[in-house]
Image (tube, rainbow, N blue to C red):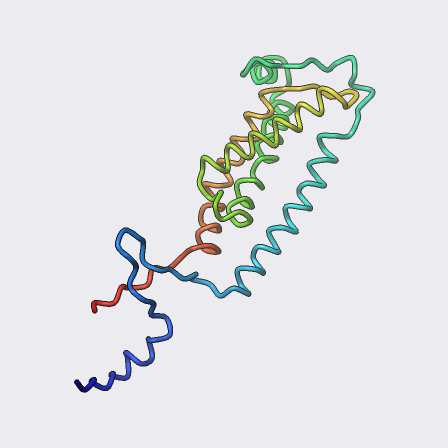
Length: 186
């Protein structure tokens, strides 16, 4: 049998073609962005995450001996929030609540870029809650003038959710998106 000469579009598209997927398997995929671009994006995200970790440590793990007599641990969700809203000035309450929300936003933006398998909302929220819970435990157990507060964990996690919704989801998809290749009709 003689084989037909392939047409020009078939020849040009041949390098991206792969063999058809075996039964029960997904078709082969390739990344939408070239590897150097993806690596650069991940490197930039890593640098931002390291910078964020330094800022987070300075904000949350620095002792505050002058505040030692004012600190109280809180394991009841909502108790600190009520106290901020009922007793503090509105500006102080918004600074405290807004600051805790803002501390979580970088997780929601950077985790989907750094960890392609943790791009989903549940992974981002769970990872943020775990990290912030550890920070709060260290604060309560080891840092003078700091206390454990479950409301801080909830606000930080809410911030991560907000960051994921606003930017992280899109960035994670842009950097790690896979493009399905069409199966050959052979």
